[in-house]
Image (tube, rainbow, N blue to C red; front, side, top):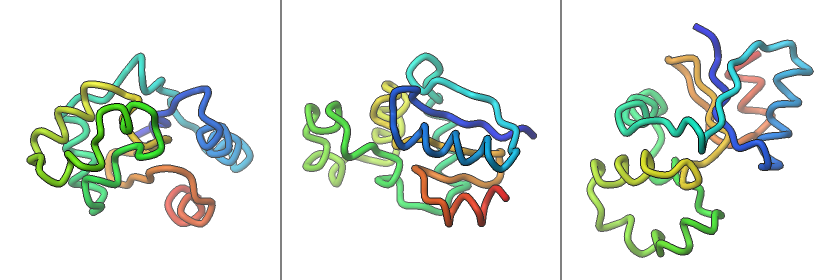
Length: 118
């Protein structure tokens, strides 16, 4: 399976991650997170594969997150509601989200990328 690089082109973290993938000769499918927002079902699969807490999938530094006051609301929302919310707006998802269907990284940490994608 090809690696999917799910990102927002204007995001500086995404640009750093993309540069790293390019420099390391790693092929990927470039997916615009807003134009092709992962579905609730896809996000559930990513979440289950990641072993990470669901709250890690939220872009907590985004304007949308703050506008919706999610810091206060998330703890009382069900997993299902959180996944539906993430699937409703790509700007709520932490990015880049990189996956090959089995492994997944969220955001960009060079050490994580080396370990996961090299």
